[in-house]
Image 1 (cartoon, rainbow, N blue to C red):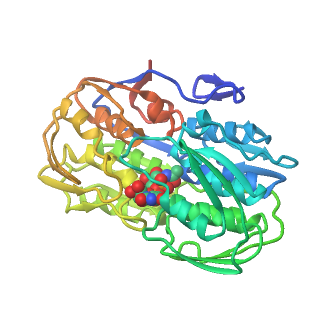
Image 2: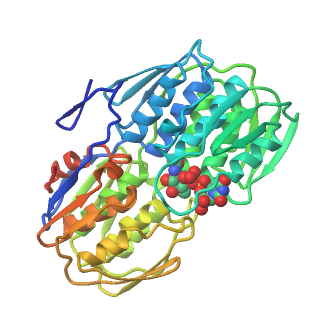
Length: 435
Ligand code: UD1
């Protein structure tokens, strides 16, 4: 059992998600300090990697999110022992050779696909179905599969099930990704970390979470170089082992709390953050008129001045502006004087918050991948529905700054990425409760 906010969850049975909604009384300035959670997008591949490495891994700063529970359930189904003590997850993956993940577990989240590289790397065999997750438009895994095929893996696709068997891995292989996919980069790293041969990934994703995964694997005995750059070199090793590792801070959660601060004219200190990973977001909030000051592992933000519109924001792979922060910034820009424009280049369906923001009185026009936001003086509380994880966070941010009461439903999406969001926001003065 464990406590999340004022709720107790059974790690073995619960999935950490809670149906229902958030009731938010808007218009309260947020003030105080928030300790930012560990990164979801790093925890998930690291948990998968704990299977690859074998032995016992002690993973600190692993947030209590429904996605992390889902990853632990996959690990348990593979025969690992997995337990949570506060924000630490201990995975013992010794002595198991499980290679199959059920469709019901795979369908919980898109990132379950990283188990493919991890399982295949360890056992030489993997059977799983196509992953689920937020509906952000088509989210194919062709790059993952093409790369694995080039690495000698035989893949049979049958009615949504992938049956993969390792073959002879080339002694040296260069893999150039046609786009820097985060998941594909992770899967190649996971598959190639153990075994023989040198793999070079060109046009690799440079997201900080990739570097975090490489750090974890290296600590487990892997030989990976160049992570953080677009050329990653993986030299396979004969064996890996467990280790103790601290997951990096969640830059998207940090940006969400920056958004909540900006939307309420507040003043926050975010602690346990890595500002160097957040420059593109920080500069957008500065341009809106917020004071943004990083200092060591803290980030101070104040929004005392009225918000201004910003120059066109274009989502791009890291180090560009992150697609995950786009809906959150959109919610803030709804009340920034002037016209702002956002071009979404990564996912097709990532404007899911926009129609809901209109219900709150926002002025947003969508044209394909472009959103034009005309700042309005005030948003009004409304009943709105989260249609994906970051859209849910965006609506929460908008509701905090709106006049009157809002209800944000479909809370299970928000629980995928935010650890007890209502507890965190209440602690800095928000009127927010889970119903
Ligand atoms: C990861 C993040 C997600 C973030 C995204 C982009 C995790 C758990 N999730 O998702 O929060 O929004 O990176 O920063 O880390 N694509 C293909 N073929 C493929 C793979 C991807 O066409 O085989 C396309 C996707 O449809 C998308 C783009 O490439 O348009 C980026 O996807 P990718 O970087 O793979 O994102 P994810 O790893 O799914």
